Image (tube, rainbow, N blue to C red; front, side, top):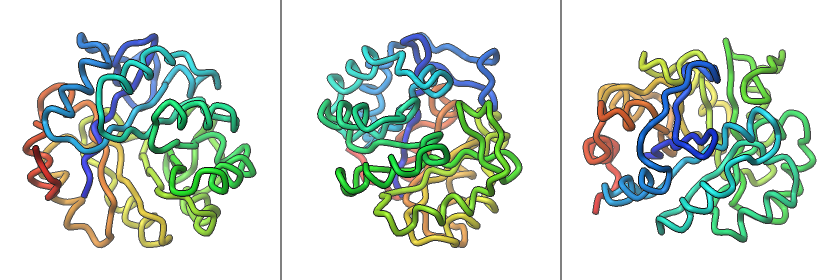
Length: 243
């Protein structure tokens, strides 16, 4: 399984939100570029970057920070947050982003996802963010009545490279992941699934690795930023290569 350290950007700084609430943000001292360089030095093979300002507003507010991240590391990056048109997809792929994540656009503009998959095979992922099993969009502000599993199935045959499933009520709470919901998503589709939200211990990683589904990887945010989980320990548990 792949370890994806999460770098969430707001106002050009690295932050973590509690259950997606902008007014409950923890701001970290290191610049985003410094943070990702530390992750790469620790042996991480991928990075998960989210433009939170973009997710909330629909416009990228952290282009300079994202560009600095791309300059700071050589490992692949998957990027989401406020990417809602083909021009933005093209811009970031040409800039060096390895995988683009669609969240809100997957619900509101599925034709954009389809076109992006055609134009950029194996470079497009879907971020499914759910509250009580139902998809939320626009930086988790807008709650829909669309079941997460239904959204996952909608894109199964379009060439989406991965589904990132986040339980909003677990995200940033350090209370453990929603393993049951993650397994249900993974077993409902053939698309690789990445688990996200609530991972706070090595035991959580062990449980996800041993769950009744084959997961591509796991995203870890607050726990890794605050030193509760060391990247080297996480890589060892997940069986990922280390440097």
